[in-house]
Each structure stands twice: as C-alpha cells, then as structure tokens.
Image 1 (spheres, rainbow, N blue to C red):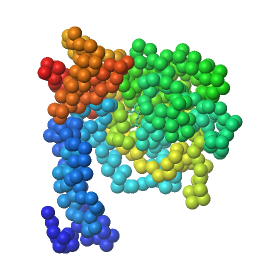
Image 2: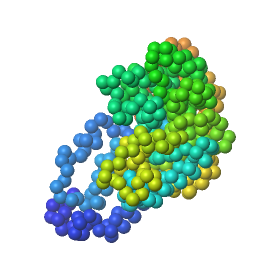
Image 3: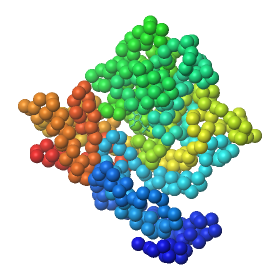
Image 4: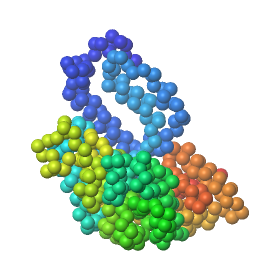
Length: 490
Ligand code: PLP
C-alpha cells in the first residue's frame, strides 16, 4: 500500500483543480477499456450470482472517507478486490433470473460519452441536441415497434417511474383538480380506483401508493388459465365500483407479465376503457421490445389504443440500465400534470420547444437517449429483431426439452423468451414438490455457473428461465438444463 508521503508526492492530482490530468484519464481510461473487454470476453471467470454474504462488502471498506486523495491505481485495485466479489453478473450469458438484460458494447460506449458530457437535459436550452435526440429516437422506436398512434415519449429511469407518471396523468385526465387542491380534506372527490391483473408488476401498486390512490384502491383482476386478465372480470369490477360511488380512473394492462410473460387481452381491455372513459396504460416493460420482430408484433395488438405505454430498452433491447421509454397519447395533458416553471428556468424558448422537465417529476435528467441512439444505430432495427428472435428460439428449444423429459413440467405458456417450469416426480405432495424445486434452484445458483429465479403460480413454486442477455447462446441453456437434471438426481 502507498504511504502518506507517496500520496502527497504523487503526480496524479497535479492539476490546479484537483482533478486528474487528462493524461491520467488516457492511461486509466485505456486500462479500463481493456479490463472491460476482458471482462466481457471471459464471463465465466466470475460466479454469475455473487457468493458474497450480507455485510461482506461493508466489512471490507473503511468506515470513513479518505481525507487525502488516493491513487486511481489503488482505487482500481480495490474495485477488483472488494467490489467485484459482491457483483452479481447480469452480463453473464448464464444469467437467466428475473428478466435477463445486457450491456451491449454500443450501449456501454454511449454511457461513457454521456458521463463525459455530463449534460443535463432538463431544458431544451440546457442541451438542445440531448432533447431533440430523445424526441427523434423515441419516434424511431415507436415506428419500429409498429405503434401507429402519434405518441409523445420521454425517457425515464425505470418502468416503475413511468407507470407512476401514467397514474398521475390518468388522474389529471379525470379533471378532479388534484394537482391544485390535492386529495386530503375534500369531500368532493370520490374514491379513485386503479385496475390491473393479479399478475401485474408491483410497480402499479407502488405507483398508486406513492401518488395517493391508496393501496386498497388497486383492484387486482383475476386471470384466466393462461394468467391473462379476464376482461369480463374487469368490466364487473368497474360496474361494481360505480355502484358504490367509486370513480374508476386507470387500467394497467401488461404485455409480458413478470412471473410468466402472459399477455393481457389489450384490445378487449381497450374496448372497456373507451366505453367507460378510463385511462389505459400498457406495461410493456419487457414484452414491448417484441414489437421489433415482425412475427411477434401481433402480441402488441391494441397497444396503440392506449393512453400511455412503457417499454424498457434496458430490459430486452440491449441498452444498459437505466432506460425506460414512456409514451403518452396526449402530450399537453402530461404537461398539464407536471409542468411548473420557476423564474430561474424560464428561457426565450419556453412554450415553443420541448423542455423535458415538463413531463415528469424530476428536473435534471441524464442523457439516456445517446446510448439508445447508439444501440439502435449500431444494431439496426433488423439486428435488434434478430437477437430477440434468437432468444425466443432458444427459450422455445428449452421448453421442448422440458416437455420431453419425464417428471418435468411446463407451468405457463411461453410466448417470448421466459419459460416457467418445475420438476414434479410422481409420489410427492405439493409441499414436497415446492421444497424440491427450491432446493434444485439453490443448488444451481450456488454453483456460480448459472442463475435462475422463481415465482409462485397458484401456490406452486415454479422455476423461471429467462433468456435475454445478448451473449446467451443455446449452449448456455443446454448447460443449465444439464445442471438442473443433475441437481434433481441428487
Ligand atoms: N413491469 C414489468 C412487467 C416488469 O417485469 C418490471 C420489472 O421486471 C417492471 C415493470 C419494473 O421495471 P423497472 O425496474 O424498470 O422499474
């Protein structure tokens, strides 16, 4: 370790500003790019699922910040020594948990440039091309997904935030004066209701909790045998609520639910929303990307009738976290919900240009459009579609292996690249089957070679294999299948 006098004498902090000189940036920048290239080339050199125990990283770090600047070489050495063991490698091709994601190389380069520019696209003026690139790229994407409605889009960090904003916009559309008067102390506002399927992502509930609908007012509509929202149950719930004097405000339909990737019947739900005058938000955080593939595009049918939609390029469009696209049909309405311009943010162009701060809660925003633009340009929409198509093919192949193997069961339809399955040998009761599958998952995950996650479907513990990383090939799925069979033979 360097001594204090080494530190004082070192040349790294030689500039007057205290920042590293650009020569050091070149040196460490090149080293880091080499490190990243090696890391991406050799994913198997780290366990996919971190083997770190709770508190390990905290224990390996000093309790207080250094008072003197430290050498980048030491910082990078500690990155390898202390930080890397606690990293779960979402970039590993054998990452099959949750929804697998990818930092593609154009995306990583986009992040690097965005970090260096450090621009803040809160106002058009504060970076005109950051704003205008966002507008153009989201138009490209809308068209590439086959959405014909002329929506307006913004990029948020996550689908959770996009959905929360949709719930606020829906309430604004209901003209209840909530923006001005709030909700408390009012007897002129009925109970406001939000509907989604029992398989919708928890972000719908969280959004409703955050913006004041109240968790009790999120109505979870029952699903059919394929885990899709039952439109007749939705219609009944709405009618029942109206009878009680409640006000239905928003329905969230999902294309690609988290547990199983089920697809709610959006056209039938859109009919109900149009008839009832209720905002329709479509959560296509994962499944929306399938619109890039012509033969999968039909899964998005009806989405263009929605009032808003979210699609996460950071899930299945090879763009590094974070990048969530939020589109609305009525740009003016979204602006009415959120725009608030203090004097210090007034510009000569206010009202004439898109100022991104007007379309959500946050003022400052990262230049996320840059990486998305670089990803789309580098792959081309055909290239993106080819990867997604291949992921679907690999997942379907895996499902066929499960189907052909005695004792193994497919647990849900698998239209995209996620397969829900379990091992269910004869002679065991449900509790034993659940415990056995938990054990199989734990054995695979402890190996460090692959990472799977689980869900529960109608009380049954189910394993999930999600193909979504850009580097995943059929051989990786074949290997985890071998591991699963070995684990159940133990
Ligand atoms: N919606 C669906 C269907 C999801 O699967 C997820 C996360 O997996 C989300 C929303 C939340 O995404 P985010 O992490 O971007 O908030």
